[in-house]
Image 1 (tube, rainbow, N blue to C red):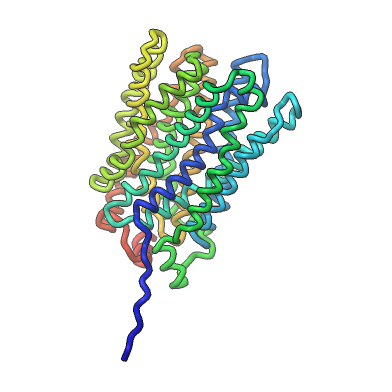
Image 2: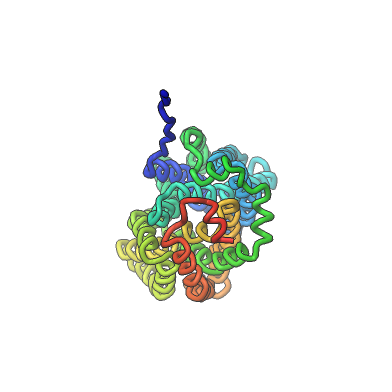
Length: 456
């Protein structure tokens, strides 16, 4: 009897999976954060006001509007990832983000179109929010379901770093344009370039993602006929899922949102709008901090594989709360005395502690949900937490500074916001972490059927 050669399905290398997933996610965050880097310019062109404080708040509010749309993106795309595939979903969201970003670069300004201009800008910001609300959960689950036991935290932590790297890329592009163009040219057409160059980059990233394979967990469920037909309904009707969502929202995700949007996003507004630092210098100081922190994401992710996700995040939250007010005060003093190295190093310290909080989060949240509805549960926990703690934090912080006259009032708001996250992570996060590690031996089981029985 002659037996033909057995067909072997080769799994793509983990490095390639992480790189391709991270590249697409970084580009989406670049598209999303170009607005942050250009807030002052876009406010001047689309939301003109004679009152500088009102104009600044209006520009920051437009940034926050996109966060209201992110849960909508989760509701639309995360269940799609659980029904038809992780890969297909983050290809679609990447394309939507690219179209919206290029659209912003093509908009007429207020001077040319009146109120239609800011309305169109807000609409496209909402579309961007919808896209990123569906993309990130799919990317995280895609990477996690490919990762081997004991490496899921490290593998998914790289994706967390893409948020700050996306902002760094946006800062570099905007700064390069401002250096190479005179002020009139930049206001006339130069501000459009960061949005328009997204088109070819997104096209290449979409082509790369189309060539990726589906996760082994999803493929096994699909072949066995175990895919959920209503993952959103299953998640919303599950007491266990709701507990996991709430623990993530008010615990680890809240901590991530507060630390990220204070240390990175609000930091830029704080330097430019509160301390009146020249934008190019503010970009440079923030960029140095991001560069120092970026390589540490996989380090903290690996530590979460060894010592537990919640434990690493909890230590980061405690240290961040202890240092954030003195750090902002030191940054203020450094700006006043032109000690820019000191300013950059203090920003870097906060960025490193933010990385410590953020890195373990994706694996921690994803491990709390069964694979049939994992992307849906992850997306809801992340985006609801982002809206509650992160999206409008820069606006609230700047408003408090304007109302009180205290430049550090916004930092006080961040500390107060982080206290419930500290408590929830300490009491419930550690328990959930221990339960998952006891059930799965420090990682997720290889077989989805076993995972479903233990999680539900």
